[in-house]
Structure formats: structure tokens, C-alpha cells
Length: 94
Image (cartoon, rainbow, N blue to C red; front, top):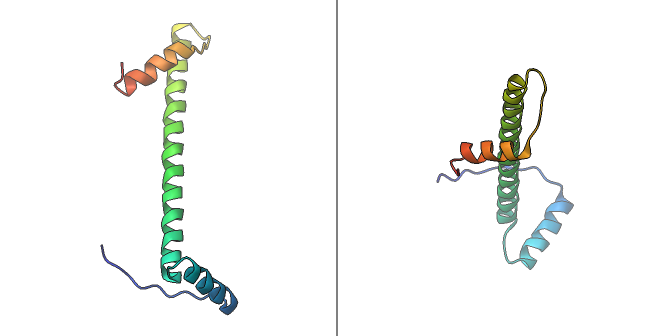
């Protein structure tokens, strides 16, 4: 993994407080910034994965409702058991 340098502009008072905090934690301001950025990126990744899972679940529900609507001649019926089976089949668990 390549390491790159980064220049930040930061208020002197904030930097002084960050240095004290880093010393108390026996680390560096650099490591604290690196950890903060890594946590933010990971958090965004988790949110994106959750959003994708929900989007897939809703798409599956919508597709199932549309199929049931077509079968029932215009009457949309949501059946939790059918939805569960569709999701489990889609995931290869049934």
C-alpha cells in the first residue's frame, strides 16, 4: 500500500489540543486523523451496503407484488410467506 503525504490547514488552538489528546492516548495527531478518516470511510461503506440490501429487498417485494397483481387480474396482494420464499430462493437458501 502506497502512503501519501497530506497537508492540512488547522487552527493553532485546535492543533495544540489535538496534540495533548494524542499524547494522552500515546499516539500521534497523524494517527488520530488517519483513524478518523478510516472510520468515516468504513461507516459510509456500511451505509451503502445497507442501502443496497434494502433496495434489493424492496425490488424483490415490488416484483413479487407485480407478479401477484398480474395473476390476480389487477388485485395486488402482499403475502409475507411468498415474499420470504422469494428472498430465500434468490439467496439460494431454499
